[in-house]
Structure formats: C-alpha cells, structure tokens
Length: 362
Image (cartoon, rainbow, N blue to C red; front, side, top):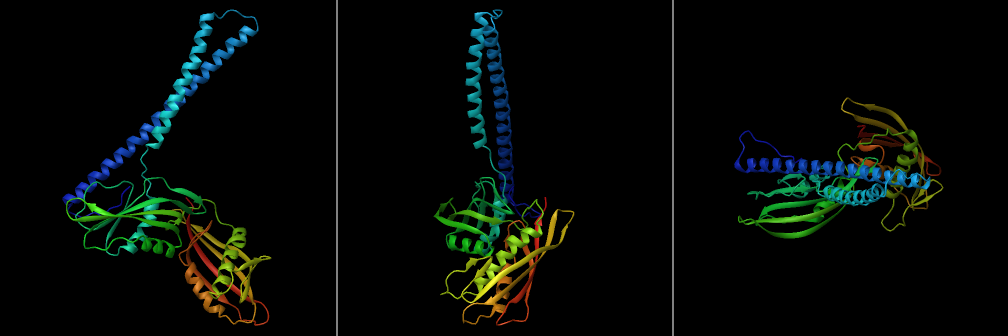
C-alpha cells in the first residue's frame, strides 16, 4: 500500500490523500473478490460439463451393450446438456480471464526499491511508493513511484518488473532526468532501463508533471528473500569465481582486451586470478527471519606479461565496489574484507576475502 508520513494535525490535502488511499484499497479488494468469484464459477461450470460428458458416455456404453432402458428423449437431453454445459464453461473461462486481468495490484515491492533511486535524483523532494496514480492535484513538489503489475521473482533474491515515476513540480523546478534515475540504480548494483515520457501541464496551479518509465531488469530489495540456505559448494562455484573474475577485470587498463576464462582461471593482460575455494563459515537466522551468512574465499594470482599492476590498490577498490551489492543465492554484501599475502613476483600470491551477506529466510 502507499507509504506516507503522518503529522499530528492532518491538513485538508493529507485527508484527501488518505481518502484516496482508502478508495484505492477498497477497489483492489473488490477486484480480488470478483476474480475469486469468477474462479469459483469456472470451477463449478467445469464440474458440470465433466458430469454431463460422463452421463452421455455411460448411456452410449449401455446402448453398445444392447441395453435399451434409456429412452431416445433422455439420450437427446444428455447430448444437449453436454453442448449446453460446454458453452457455459467456455463463457465462465472467459469471464475468469477478464476478472484476472482486472485485478488491481497492491504490491509495491519494486516501488520501494526504486524509491531511493528517485530520491537520489530529486534531493529534498518527497518520494512516495504507490500502486495507483493519484487523482488529487498536489500543491507542492512530490514524486510518486507507481507499480501497477505484480513483482516478478527471478530467484536468488533478485526481482524484476516495471514502475512509472510521476513527478509533480512547479514550473520553476528542474525537470526529472531519466539518466539520473538510471545512474542511481546502477550505483545500487541494479540493472534498469529508464526512459522519459516528457512533461505536461497539470491542474490549474501552474504545476508540471514529468513521467519516467523504469524497466527493472534485475533489482534487489534491501534484504532479499532467499528461502534456500546458501552452501559452501555455491560459495566455491559462484562467489569465488565471481570475485576472481572481478579482480582480474579491475586490474585491466582501458586499452586491454577483455578478461578470458581459461581452465577455471581468469586471464587478464597483467595478472591471472585463480579461485581456490569458498566456504560458508557461519550462518545465523534471527527471530525476524533475517539470515546472516559469512563466507571465506581463497584465491591466488600470478603476474601475466611485463606490465606492473598494483593489485593491492585494485583489491581495495573491488572491496568497496562489492559493498552493498547483491550476490545471487547469498544476498546483500553487508561487509567485506580482503588481504593479500606477501607478493611473489615469480610465483603465486594468495588472496583471502571474508564476506558477510544479509538475506531473509522467510
């Protein structure tokens, strides 16, 4: 539902917003009830059709056995009932699909995720997650992040879907830039495509409304839900390899070719990084269902080519980049530390990384 701040003394505008919330929630409830009723009717009509087909089949079986106890009128009635029940069932199915498409979404998971991106683009402006487009004309600058379709779950704690941002502003305020939203999402380690639909006048109080459509290709909530507990096998196969690949890429110059994966190693122009293993060293779930998972990663690297690269510097940058990011099946990185063993210019140098993930088990 819509998230709004409350004041001790409601203003007329706040009261109008609360009334609009109530009406929207009531409409959503009614749409769900209508869909449930349509589902029940479709189920009943399907049962009636199945029964009619069974009765007709039983009569035919009796005829084939030479039993003439059923009259021609009864058989004709049975045939007619099959046709009648089939048409009623088809009509009920169409009504069910129409009722399903008319269900009003109240899920604002994506709106809440996108709220921080919009807030970053509109510093000082109130940003409100919502599932409906407000009808009340605001008198001050405000932005709504509207989600009208349910969230699609990708698994591993990631989600996708679409939201639209409507920014109501006085004429003198700067228009909302889709690029700012996309940049904020990327800083939050989410992949989105944001496109502006332009601005237009709104109401009779010299307000403008800017609209930005945001497609969330892969998003993450503050604490993603991951019902299956992470394992050491996943830490070795997924997390260690992801970190090794990123470390090799961080040590690349702009003119270097892309890092290559060769024999479970990541080959860059200056170093080759090899993930050794990963292990879940501890896991705790609190009363609220929040899971804290600690993972230890072990890697090594050796020099490649003749160029000198400051691996320690790039490791620190990578640790900062991973902070707050999401790793599939593990959750959000709440803390990460790493260290490099004494560098061996001719052989392998060990790298140890400790990562703490936060997720929800339920």
